[in-house]
Image: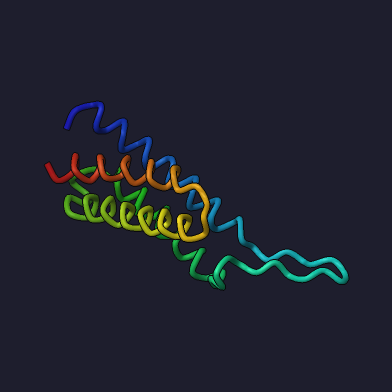
Length: 119
């Protein structure tokens, strides 16, 4: 593994730690003002599922940058798991007729990390 591969892994891990933290904090319930209807999550997703995805993204990102001696088999599996999560995120946004470009970009980045870890 050369330095470029390692820097891409750090970049992907940093992005997914930030995305996971934002996902955990973003959908926190807020008190609603008088007379206002509560804004539901899209497609009826429960808050716990979004928090679980955020926690998974943070843990998988940390597993990617773990040293080889600590987790030789966990890092490629974590990268593949992040690739699956980003692909499902892109499909979710396409279903809602939103832009899926950020998700597909993250998918390609994590796919590059996964291929670099398996080779």
